Amino acid sequence: MTIRQLSETLINQIAAGEVIERPASAAKELIENAIDAGATRIEIATAGGGKTLLRVTDNGSGMMPQDLELAVRRHCTSKLSDSLLDIRTLGFRGEALPSIGSVSRLSIQSRTAASTEGSEIVVTGGKVEAVRPAAANRGTVVEVRDLFFATPARLKFLKTEKAEASAISDVVRRMAIAFPHVRFVLSGPDRSTLEFPATGDDRLARIAQVLGKDFRDNAIEIEAEREGVSMSGFAGVPTFNRGNSLHQFAFVNGRPVQDKLIWSALRAAYAETVPHGRYPVAVLAINMDPELVDVNVHPAKSDVRFRDPGLIRGLIIGGLREALSRDGDRASTTGASGLMRAFHGGSIRPAQPWDMSSSPYRPVQPQPTPTTFAEPPQARFDTFIEPSARAEPAPVPSQGADVAVSHPLGAARAQIHENYILAQTENGLIIVDQHAAHERLVFEAMRTALHARPVPAQALLIPEIVDLSEDDCDRLVTHSEEFRRLGLSIERFGPGAVAVRETPAMLGEMDVVGLIRQLADELAEWDTANGLQNRLEYLAATMACHGSVRSGRRMRPEEMNALLRQMEATPGSGQCNHGRPTYIELKLADIERLFGRS
Image (cartoon, rainbow, N blue to C red; front, side):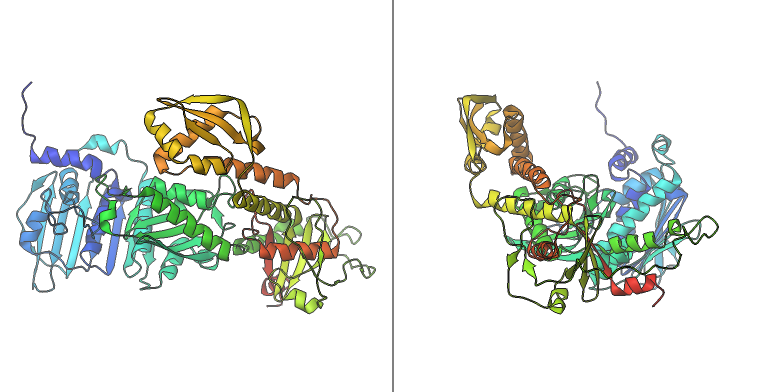
């Protein structure tokens, strides 16, 4: 078999298979180039979902004629010296423009601030024409037409024009969040325009432009640092969640990334607070020494590798949980919005001719003045050791009703349908799901007990021998003390095996081999072993569900107030163990709008 040198055009087309997967990939590369050139205004125009036309215009530094000639050649870049250890730009490989030019009709016009005229270069299916003078404003205009015309087989793998246009929009949104000082304008063939004005240092304002104004009202600021690595950004309260992960954004040193370690840590941080099948909303920016992260993993540059993945995972989980425990125990504003919509729904309007005897609009009959829920002296829902179905109050000095209303969750005024507590605050109304709220309180008490002392263990009559690779055995034994505190006792048993002598008593009979293999896999991938802790907490959550105040049970006013006070003192009480909200808040202004008083 004879070995021969491939042509430059074929080499570029092969590279384009990885770098330019779809029109959105080309848009990402061109936008990154514009940002690296110092642009503060970037305009993107598309037609045919980016397949027919993709034009990116910026007001960056521009290029000289000799730079244009080099820009369309492979591995020519202004962003890299002789080392991959200190990458501070978005682009650095020098592959994007030649890859795009090899599969499309590419033209680049550019002018620097010091030049009186611009220059243009055209590349058609990999054939480069000579640079020529052109009228151009300061900055660069890159126009890509007929993407993949030179490799028509690739066109068969693209999605519909609408889907490809949506993918380009996603790219622009991610870039807009990462660079709030840049103005982005995206226009399509239907004259629709997506615009993100620059917000400068106000990152939350830019995020609200992309994710909607509701995010601003439901966002928690994140600030954390560990061993020289910092994390900042904003995360939504647990009750502000979505049905997919499209509202999760991560950036490493300003670079938008899609990293499974980050997404896994984000899910772990919101465990027990977001329902299954729902996703938290978050924007996280991680900054570190460029030498601690490898961005040269894939030509698309969306994957990264961290030198210390355990540090990054711990920083994300710890930082998010600390912020959620500090500010996350509040109801999402979307809950009140949904309640408002329900009040305004068509179902409350009579569909039949008006009849006084059955109409909801009939004159109200006088009712006896209720005396059941007069406000008694307040009580606190004291800390408990064992889960109980009774919410027993502890006596405290008497307080007036006005003092009780000043509490964040207010003073209980009524219980409706033996399940929901109505409480009055200084500026609104709180509706509490008594079972969900008490379930969370019991679970938090049990979880605190798990962390406060070693978990009781049960000895196995015959030790379970689990065969594993030597590497897995070494990793498990390294964490043996951590496992012992959770009731799991393991030790080496010759080459390629571990012996399990004790398991957590609260788990009862279990698949020991399956648990050990799961822990080994988790350690191999993340260098952390949270699987056992998660199992124990899951069981605690199940026990809490069966040991809490049941729906349908009538509560005395002092019990309801005690429950409210304990919720205020317990982190995470805004959601039940399944992630559903435990209460909804209606501001007085919302109530007045319902009655047309505002």
